[in-house]
Length: 303
Image (cartoon, rainbow, N blue to C red):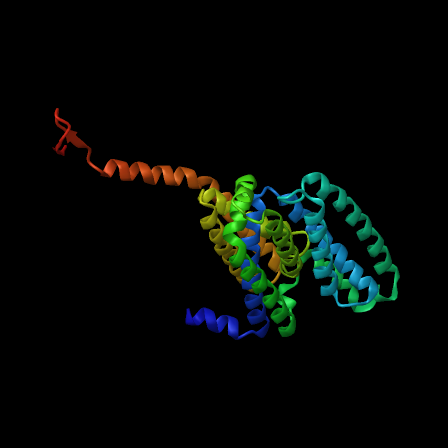
């Protein structure tokens, strides 16, 4: 443990990456669990493209890239919440808005590549948005990303149980006085914030993997939604730590590759989980000697 702490603290860029990455992964794991539970993975995919479009808009206008990331993702999330049903947007709404956002992305890409802001050192900014640049975060950027991610975590802790209830059975939840529509709007806002902050860790193209892979693995490991919520967060954090370590030890491998590679490997490994649990259950059954029942219904002893 001491060696690991020294390993991180000896390099300021690793300290920033691990601090921000842990908070981002924790938020992504919690939000991703609800995304998968509600069957709204398409919304997460759409937000990844919105993040790229928002970043291109900021670059084309010559403002801070994060304004475009957070602003675009939040605006899109609120639009989905407003246009969708009580429990959230359906695929028709998402697909329609998604196509419009891709059109805006093409426009801003053209403006960015032809304007003066698209020359010089800014040429790599678009690539960093696509694939992430968590090892390149400054101390101030890491602090802001950590604060945003922890705000998402706090929001999920506050609304987690009623949100799960509303996601599993919205009709019964509404009948019992749960504000289903308000919870859905709050969920989309948190999802938008998570998409904006996670794009800086793994990039817009791989954002969906950080949302879906740990959550999918957790839901294959347990049928209890609240346990799956926190198990997804733990798997996401573990994938983040392992991916950052791989990126440091193998400099040719980008951090996003290591993070998503580990997350995907964990998800694939869970396909063996049912067989493992069945084998363990069969072993415990064999270890328990059966009882011998007398004719009067009483237990005489074990064979």
